[in-house]
Image 1 (cartoon, one colour):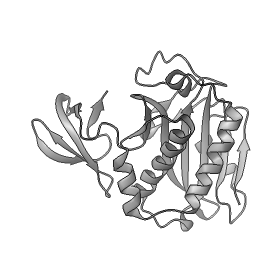
Image 2 (tube, one colour):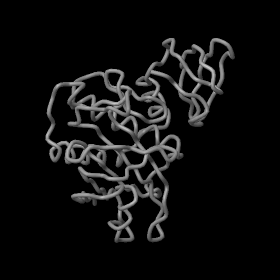
Image 3 (cartoon, one colour):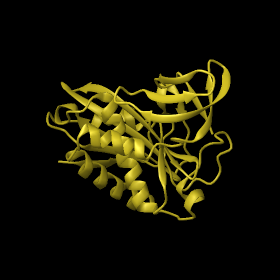
Image 4 (spheres, one colour):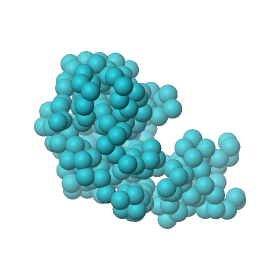
Length: 238
């Protein structure tokens, strides 16, 4: 049974979700707020969000009910959120490896997935920050919102309910790992295009070839040839 809880304000929905996992068989329990004060991104990065403009959403999924590796679960979650936004906006939406969501070359969603043991159960804690109505992004030049990228003003409550229903439906029926990986690569941002990367403090051109089942990304670099990297080992500049 899925449940969707709301807090008027909280520091981090990923941190607060544990208070709502009260039952042994809790699954697909979600928490959201439109005023997250201390959001976290990948590897300790800060996710800054304007109050009553954006959505911080966290969904807890019982690990026992999925057969995916951590990397494949990450890929599938990114696929699901990408599909939701592509259907909603009727725009081309891409995934920037490993799990940022890109619309018209701007980041509109950041995803943080953690694995936690809560009340004797292991959960995937899916945290996602959606930029929806924010119009100014002074400090994060590569970020934007659904409003600025599509010109549409979405109702935050309606958006959240639709998102939650879509997430739960898709996570209850998980496809094969091959389907997940193929879909992820089909929607991979900057795939097969010449891009600029930063590696060990030096910039060089390269072409993203594909994401791998192991969680690595394969890039054909101008100076160093075809190599595979884990997250934070190389940076795509855009």
